[in-house]
Each structure stands twice: as C-alpha cells, then as structure tokens.
Image 1: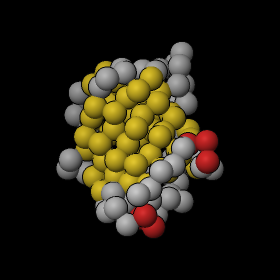
Image 2: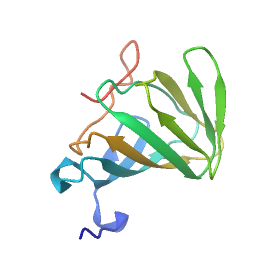
Image 3: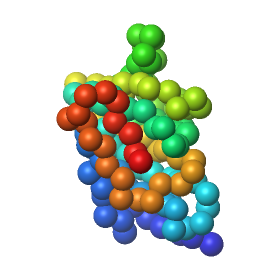
Image 4: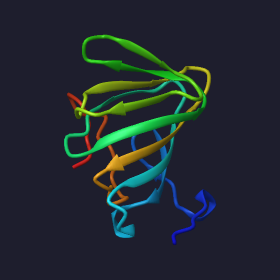
Length: 125
C-alpha cells in the first residue's frame, strides 16, 4: 500500500505552475497521479506525445482550447481527457489559479518539466 500527502512532496515547477507527483513510474502502478496548480493568467501550449492524460478540476477556473479553436470551460467538477495525444492550450483564469488532479499513462518519471518558451506545443519526453 502506498500512502502519501502532498505536504510530504517537493513541488515540481512544470512551466506555468507547480505539480506534486503523488504517484510516479518508480511506484510501479503503470500510471501517475499529480496534484497540479496552473498559475492564474497563464496559457500553456501542450501536447503529450507519449502519454495519455485525464484531468479533474478541484478548484479555480480556466479553459482548454483545442487546435480547431473549440473552447471547453473548466470549473470545479469538470474532467477532460486527452485520449488522442491532443494538442491543446490550457488557460487559467486571470483571477485565480486552476487546480487539477491529473492521471498520466504510462507513468511519469516525476521530474518532467515543460519548455514553454519554444515554438510549438511543449511535451514531456
């Protein structure tokens, strides 16, 4: 059994916020579980080429915008899943941080960070 609290974990600066990696590849669960904060007013161009991701909003607000320009509002109780390695923009409200619980498959190593200052969509390799 694995029992952890986010208070025990060092937050990873992933690019536009902080991520606490509750489960990683080293735990042998075949998926990762993160508690992720997206800073207010940020926009992140993301695409996971090797991972599928599902996110559940627990606080704050924002939106996910696909490459066709479809806007999906994100508020507490909303889940979105990137089931086709979808390129997307994750945008936090200008007024508040967006907090998500995320599952990645396959599991993250735990030290991944985005390169948001480069052209195109950032991804974990």
